[in-house]
Image 1 (cartoon, rainbow, N blue to C red):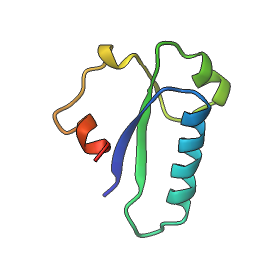
Image 2: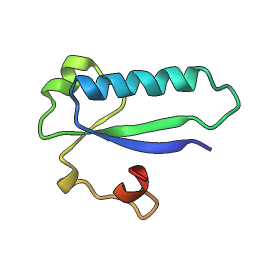
Image 3: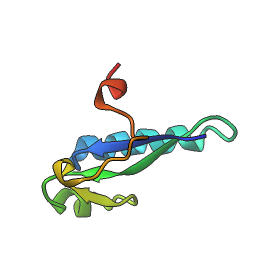
Length: 77
Protein backbone atom coordinates (compact mmCIF):
# COMPACT_ATOMS: atom_id res chain seq x y z
CA UNK A 1 0.00 0.00 0.00
CA UNK A 2 1.25 3.48 -0.85
CA UNK A 3 1.30 6.46 1.44
CA UNK A 4 -0.58 9.28 -0.25
CA UNK A 5 0.44 12.91 0.21
CA UNK A 6 -0.50 16.35 -1.02
CA UNK A 7 2.19 18.96 -1.58
CA UNK A 8 1.34 22.50 -0.54
CA UNK A 9 3.10 24.99 -2.78
CA UNK A 10 4.74 24.63 -6.18
CA UNK A 11 8.04 26.42 -5.58
CA UNK A 12 11.59 25.12 -5.92
CA UNK A 13 11.15 23.46 -2.52
CA UNK A 14 8.16 21.49 -3.85
CA UNK A 15 10.25 20.45 -6.85
CA UNK A 16 13.03 19.25 -4.54
CA UNK A 17 10.61 17.34 -2.31
CA UNK A 18 9.12 15.74 -5.43
CA UNK A 19 12.59 14.68 -6.54
CA UNK A 20 13.30 13.15 -3.12
CA UNK A 21 10.01 11.24 -3.23
CA UNK A 22 10.66 9.98 -6.76
CA UNK A 23 14.21 8.88 -5.83
CA UNK A 24 12.86 7.14 -2.73
CA UNK A 25 10.22 5.31 -4.76
CA UNK A 26 12.74 4.23 -7.40
CA UNK A 27 14.79 2.48 -4.70
CA UNK A 28 11.89 0.54 -3.17
CA UNK A 29 10.67 -2.33 -5.33
CA UNK A 30 8.56 -4.16 -2.75
CA UNK A 31 8.38 -1.63 0.05
CA UNK A 32 5.81 1.05 0.74
CA UNK A 33 6.10 3.97 -1.65
CA UNK A 34 4.84 7.55 -1.50
CA UNK A 35 2.19 8.65 -3.99
CA UNK A 36 1.80 12.38 -4.62
CA UNK A 37 -1.90 13.12 -5.09
CA UNK A 38 -1.32 16.64 -6.36
CA UNK A 39 -0.13 20.17 -5.66
CA UNK A 40 -1.92 23.09 -4.03
CA UNK A 41 -1.08 26.72 -4.73
CA UNK A 42 -2.81 30.02 -5.41
CA UNK A 43 -1.88 29.90 -9.11
CA UNK A 44 -0.26 27.45 -11.51
CA UNK A 45 2.75 29.54 -12.65
CA UNK A 46 5.35 27.53 -10.72
CA UNK A 47 3.46 24.30 -11.35
CA UNK A 48 3.96 24.88 -15.08
CA UNK A 49 7.55 26.07 -14.58
CA UNK A 50 8.59 22.83 -12.86
CA UNK A 51 6.46 20.54 -15.09
CA UNK A 52 5.09 18.41 -12.26
CA UNK A 53 3.44 15.16 -13.42
CA UNK A 54 0.77 14.99 -10.74
CA UNK A 55 -2.29 17.27 -11.00
CA UNK A 56 -2.51 20.91 -10.00
CA UNK A 57 -5.34 21.11 -7.44
CA UNK A 58 -5.73 24.86 -7.01
CA UNK A 59 -6.09 26.39 -3.55
CA UNK A 60 -6.54 23.99 -0.65
CA UNK A 61 -9.45 26.08 0.68
CA UNK A 62 -11.41 25.14 -2.45
CA UNK A 63 -10.53 21.44 -2.40
CA UNK A 64 -12.96 18.86 -1.05
CA UNK A 65 -10.92 16.47 1.07
CA UNK A 66 -12.08 12.90 1.66
CA UNK A 67 -12.38 11.41 5.13
CA UNK A 68 -9.50 9.10 4.27
CA UNK A 69 -7.08 11.96 3.55
CA UNK A 70 -4.41 12.44 6.19
CA UNK A 71 -4.77 15.38 8.52
CA UNK A 72 -2.12 18.09 8.70
CA UNK A 73 -1.32 17.14 12.28
CA UNK A 74 -0.45 13.61 11.17
CA UNK A 75 1.84 14.82 8.44
CA UNK A 76 3.84 16.98 10.83
CA UNK A 77 4.17 14.53 13.72
